[in-house]
Image (cartoon, rainbow, N blue to C red; front, side, top):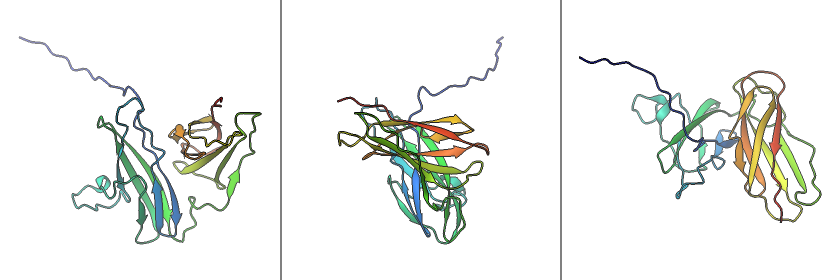
Length: 216
């Protein structure tokens, strides 16, 4: 005779790596994607990430009967031409050496549309200056309203007073409002860091971008 009980156990990941993220630029129906701001576990011996893009998760491109699992490109910065104007949901899946995966989805609007993703003009913050270590930090973002579940790329440009290129970590944080950054920590490349903000609710959003000062 035996007795058994069933209990649900929820296992939490030990860390948040890898973390999928990408930015994109639209030129009519041609879209240039870049997943270079995806995060990886720096403690691994091999930090290589594998990329899998599905440029329209409503379509079954490989004919297997599942719409959102297509593997249309495996590069970090693919360029894709959409057949007609419209709104498309793009999915990026990344995997690291431990076969740990992460997925992110973003809406892309292409063609001659009056669309939230089109940048009318860039709105820049006031530059913040520091006496010795960093000359300026400026933020730029599309000058438009965003709706719930919409996404927008926020760029941070860092200029160091000593003339050296800043390639360290930049931190993005929500101070007021509802939403999140994907990712919240970004490694700058040639003085530029880009993170994607996703709005969870309408209203005023105040964000903080922090660049740790590096001595030397």
